[in-house]
Length: 373
Ligand code: ZN
Image (cartoon, rainbow, N blue to C red; front, top):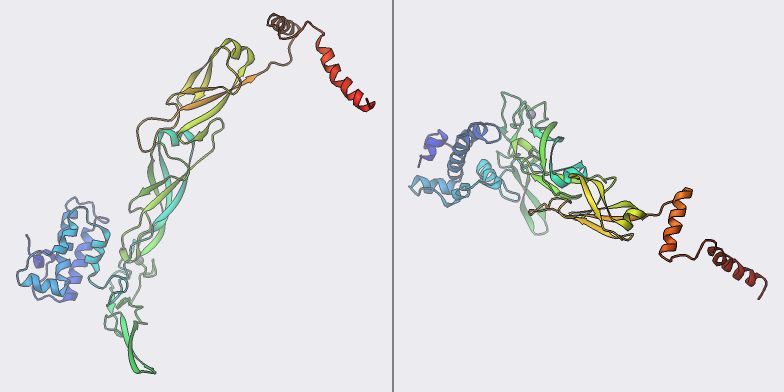
């Protein structure tokens, strides 16, 4: 195991400030967000581990006595988390409510954007290029918040403590209270010349293109999480996540019910009676809908696995086709006589003309009512 002092490049009698400065310098060079060097990740872990121990007076004393690696360093084992980095980066007291100065560096917020997709994209997945508008690291100061060539200075008022003590008179006599330092706003440092591009925040807003993969099976309301693509934090803090909320545009033909699709298909009366194979334009191209002889209005034909792909499992929903039987109109003479002949053969009407009395029957009842019988 390398010596922690060597890792940070400081002498064994280095002050806390020296150690912090050395670590920040290395971290800025090795942070996974700023370098593509494949070995930087491991170096960064090593450096952070060394800093975590040496920045803590108790752990440092133990280390100096030969106490070795601290259990706290285990947090860097598998994919170290942001809080580990933050703790290591800014030492003790960075947390809310803790004693000592507050850190300018905060994790950025999560961001949410909406993306409209059409049914085919939702069903099969898609790649989309989107524009994301978030805070990004300030290109001028790289998150230091200072004009290039300058650096934060320890606050003269609180001497870097971030808080000031006041004596307050009360009924019980004089009481000491602590309050955030009004000069440095609790940070313990002041910026003699804040970066002009970001006004000393260490980040600026920018629009950037992002290619996202929309998985098959998404629906309106599905949120896709993109780690670390949200708002960059203040003073070089790590970014939050980006959530992409899917909104599916209505389709002119198909409606969606879970992963099943529904549509209606107009079927001529003759096809419904005789049976037919009717072509239907589906998401998978033209498919034949098999209408059985004697099909009834409202009857459903299911095309298996022609719906939307399941989001969390394999397989697909179905396409359910509801038949809408169309009665022919505008019959020409020949068609009409054929239908009459058919009706006679099926015994569904009495010979021509006998429908008349049925209608008259209705009128005669009305007439009877009006005449008071
Ligand atoms: Zn800046």
